[in-house]
Amino acid sequence: MEWHNEYYCSNVIWHCLQMLMADPRIGPSHVCLFLSLLVLSGPDNREFPVYKDRILKMTRLSAATFHRGIYHLQRCGYLCYSPSFDPKKANKVMLNF
Image (cartoon, rainbow, N blue to C red; front, side, top):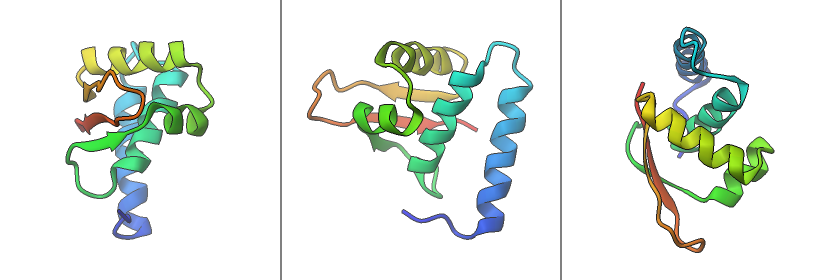
């Protein structure tokens, strides 16, 4: 999926950064993880498939940091995460912003 245009993309990213920066529970690895998921989500905010290996390459986070960050973002209400528990199947993510 492609973003509608640069203006829309920059507004969405700016809104998400403002939201994350206002939350004292969120650190740099959370921001990196959330923004990489935002890029993969496309313009519509629907559930989308995510492969852990792809996110790890994009963010350069360790697997432990990925898991800790994704569950923390979920507990904070920034996303809904449904793990597949199968490395060959995609996990499902829906962003809440």
